[in-house]
Image (cartoon, rainbow, N blue to C red; front, side, top):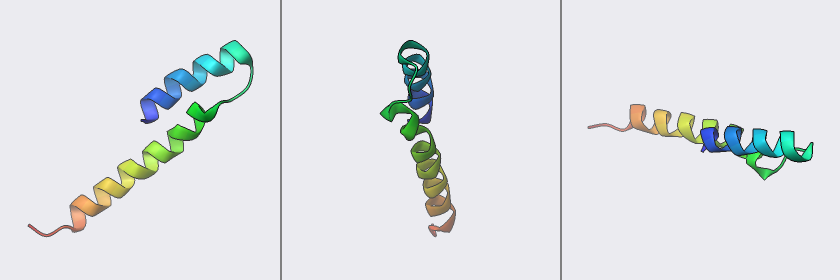
Amino acid sequence: MSVLGLIFGAIDLVEYGEPSIWMAMIPAGFALLLLGTVVTQFSGK
C-alpha cells in the first residue's frame, strides 16, 4: 500500500503538479504495518 502510494503519488505529482489521494496512502500503509506488527507481537501462541 505504501509502495503503491509512493509510486503513483510521485507520478501524479510530477504529471499534474499536485498531490493526489495516492499520497495519503503512504502514512496509512505505514500505520497498518505498525498495527499488524503490534498485534502479532501481543498475540499469544
